[in-house]
Length: 322
Image (tube, rainbow, N blue to C red; front, side, top):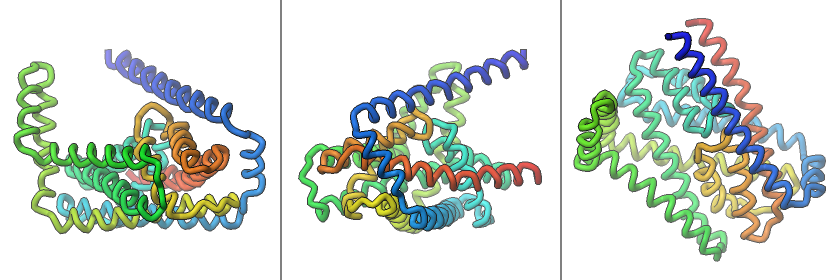
């Protein structure tokens, strides 16, 4: 019976990956059919490889900064956590993002890794959740601050950012609301086969709520997240420069947050296809060619893919040590 269940899980996992690969492939095909492929290939052929290499090194630095952010956020729950652990498992998370629906899948892997080391799984996942929410909030905050200076008059972009920010804030309010969470738990508890889920969720939410009394930690986490999002967008700008494009940094600060949030939708492989669609739609609305937008997006993905190899090595080494 156990073997059959394991086989069923394996088939389900393979099927899920194939579906996501198919979605990514279809999205990319549609995008390529609607753009000048010749100009796109010309951009890739003329890429400044030296600048791209320095951009790769810069990107590695942003991952170290992300690991530092997680150490700050997890400290109230796991006080003895080491910076090396948060940084190294951030790399591991980036590696697993290549096979999972969105970057949230990588969050699960890094939270599992640190949770297993310190035997505080619930606390590790709670910190990863709050960190992710702060990251989303900081991402959209950067866009709101940048849009007025970018001279963007496209209402669809402005409205999209505001709607995304509204839902992120709404979820955080729900998470910290005793009444709202209590109502949900009561509903789950009334359903017999969901009672265990209700108990687990209640325990997890109580762990998350530790942050209600850790306002300084949350505030510092937010500030670090703002810097982190700026660094990630700066990486996109550097990739753009390596392709010989002259899109102002302020434009990327305005539209890249939208693309990041869109890529969280768990229908493709690591956001591949969705991310390119997001870049194409937002930048073409501002007068930039679709092939330029897609070239930037795919090159950013390539830089991330190269960096994720480090995560594979770390995962293999740490697994052997265990």
